[in-house]
Image 1 (spheres, helix red, strand yellow):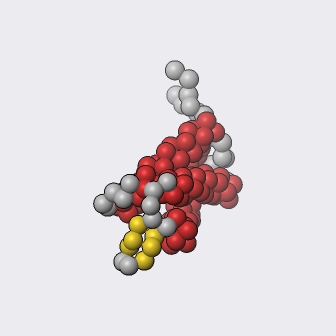
Image 2: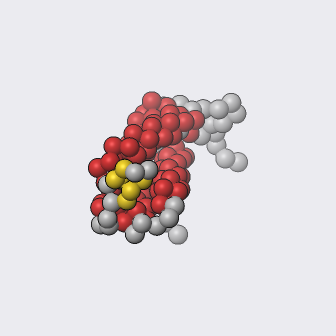
Image 3: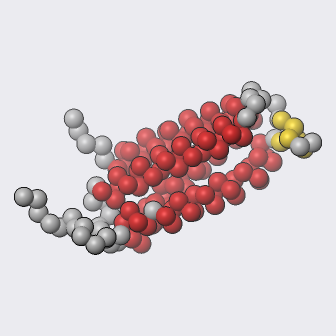
Length: 148
């Protein structure tokens, strides 16, 4: 079996996040009870997909050990791309159905983007900053040691 390369895994992650966003959008389009819970749950899965890609990128040697600045740039690219396709697919999916009324307010895709996108990008920023640990050297670890 061939190993999966980090770049290919990143492309798969984007596809997965697009599908997750479309699923969350479909929950809003069909006025599913608990659509907000579905949306937040699927967003957590998109963060998990980004974390898997970031870990594989750090282990694959794509980023040198202790080059945490470059690692953070890569993580930002991974997480923000995943979040952006998730939000776009969510909004497109939600636009396919009628707007919902939430707390007496019409909750259409534009309102959804204005309210949900900042929270999604805030969580994405936190995950990006937390990924610094994937790229830092910890005591007793070294990729340069030879295997016996």
